[in-house]
Length: 369
Ligand code: SF4
Image (cartoon, protein in one colour):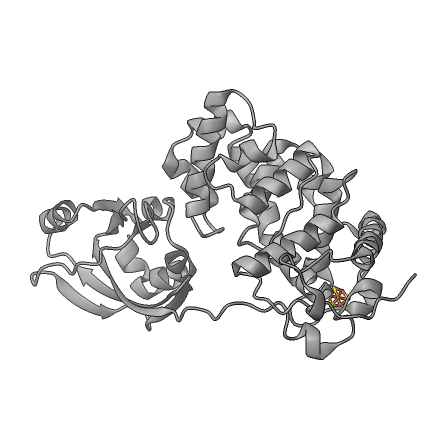
């Protein structure tokens, strides 16, 4: 196979790629190498075994911010709860949130639910990339992935993995998350695309990104793109790619949750429908009146990172002086008195589920009865 050694920095057009026939040959070699590599190395993921539009759509939404190992059991469980798009469309939002628990980023679940309603009303799944783009929660990457895998439409899907592989392959110095860099990455992905097998092709590039061209330790020796890649075996290059715009600094959020209890019950509150953890259940942020006994802090402050937010959460324990005072506090603050088991069956923020057992242990059996 021809070895490509020139760099592209001096000859970038607007899209940064496909200036000349060398680019086309290089892209064609990359395409063929990806195809034969994928046929030998594709992981046997459940949504690939018996592909369906519903299963592909779910997998694409679930895997947006979730690791494949976590996504597989959730994908099976979600489809047992909602076997069809009609079941999902007709479910309550609380049930959808509950089924989503453990995956985090609940906005995805809300948008999935809204999209299911649109599909159910239309009576059929969208049949083109452009139609998928019209649905809530479907951006260019997801629409391209579903249309290519589920419908065989020749559109190149670009996610974070593809950005990294393409930026390294072309030693591209532009930030991939800025307009010019994004355009350049799309041009590379379009040039690579296998028009006869677009679904396999898109999965091949993503798979190379996930398994071979990893952020910190790319395995160029095992990479099908190595003969055509500008960064292959060149740590000075791959370690700096992809270039990203400087990140916004995370803001600090000092959060206090009040664990208000009375004889085995606790006050839970559904969070507002907008903002952080919308519609999930958590503890009140408002302290109860002075007649409640402050039993101290339940845990050391817990740190939790959300996009652009660094949360430090403190859990105060309060015991209500009477059932009446307990119920009145719940009612006045728009909360609900629940047993711990009922609270546990609601959809809760990840910050809460990750320390849930520690909270119960800190309260002790006496308090939970
Ligand atoms: S050759 Fe190396 S740097 Fe290039 S795409 Fe493959 S793993 Fe990444």
